[in-house]
Image (tube, rainbow, N blue to C red; front, side):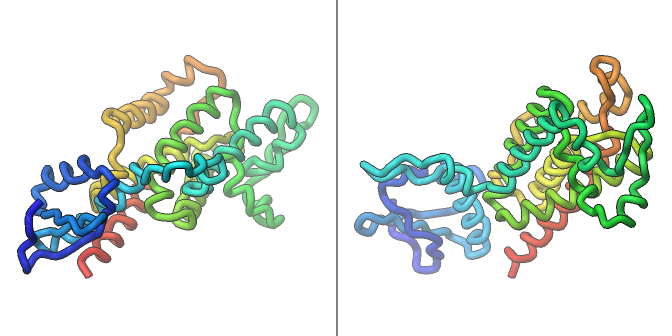
Length: 288
């Protein structure tokens, strides 16, 4: 530690007990000049250029999200409720997906209330209504509810894992309201895209939203990089490969049913647009 130059800018006071070694290494890797000065039980963090302050603040916020302070000696461990408080929207979406799979498996008479358009059985044939009819009857929830229907445990597990993996990067960073709004926009756009592509049919699943979150993180992190938005190596390539493979029809040959490729593609595009908007908005705030 050394005495900061008078022209340097103090960014934060950090308790001595917190080990931020990885954070300081990140600053060094990005070429950000910094100095540390201890005063009592606190360490002052100073940076050498005022234009680096917004970036350092963002890095510190991201680091704190991934490395919460250790519990005080004797303090009770966080319970389930405290853990989910950071991302209630992600948790609720996963729980509703579990409910949706249960309805598909055990509540068949209820399924028609969750599909994009209503349907009924005429003998052994399914007779589908249209989305126009549903909207004319005020059934606007149908724009969203197909994302909760899941056809089998693999379908649910795939979407649940990626919803958790991607959502936990967005909701703690941007807040639950932001997460809810973008998830609903992705749901509506992916469901509508699938309906327009295939016409009245039985489709469902959270994967359109999952691809939306992928596109959101991908573009937002390019426009306004944040460590918390960094995706695991190979994830983007795998998900895009899965999307393209689904469009070729190869995956349909290996499983029962078919993949809602239009929902995936439209969800991805919607997420990219929302991620670009969020990144530009954040960059604008940083320059003010």
